[in-house]
Length: 316
Ligand SMILES: [Zn+2]
Image (cartoon, rainbow, N blue to C red):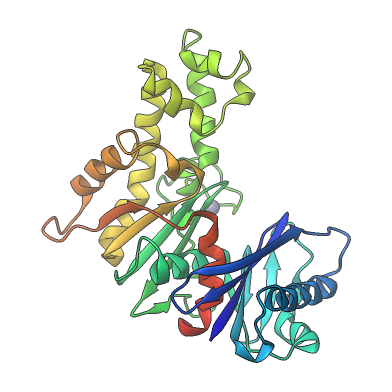
């Protein structure tokens, strides 16, 4: 049997034909047509899935299920996309519309939960339970697989780890609260810290990397400058790692996952600048030091969403 996983992003749609082992056999993608209504988008996903079968010479009857991962709030029980950021979906009955075009079992998941499902089934978290996947991007996404099932909370908003409050009077977050973890541990936060430190230190090597324009700073900027020995960049990374570690320590002490995998662009930094110092900070804050949580880089990259969506049917 085969599965189809679709990763719906704000700008791009990716669909993959996936086997039981979580391997992607074939993949198609195209940009999101911003002019499409929510209903047209759902039908587009169904047509994309059918095309994938035809490309891979797989009969429709060989597809066990289709899973769709979306950036937002989804209700798999009802088959509805409740709301998404910057997309047309708004209480959209995706499953019902999809099945008008192709009557196949359709499962829905939040993108962070799909990433966790993918890493658990076929990536860095394989064989680890509970497994937590934390994605460092514009914000911080979180997902957990426990007892082989994706944990969603009672109404699908569980594991919004980016909004755990780590500084009660801290930086204002888009959610309305102050001091959310994603204001200190996301890629956006790293760039903010980089720009602040550049303002303080006009001699930092980071200026040259940004061609004299601090708005050209990227997540990789402080890592590259720290590699050259730049003291300002080292201060940025020390502050960032401290902020990142607080949320991870909380997750470790509340959930005691067997593994926490870090994904997203920032996680690509070299081990001696990111994972190794982070592991040291986390173990210092771990309650049960005899049974520490493994901290690793996620291994499926952008494919985690497709693989996890495809295999959601086994994990909900
Ligand atoms: Zn928040």
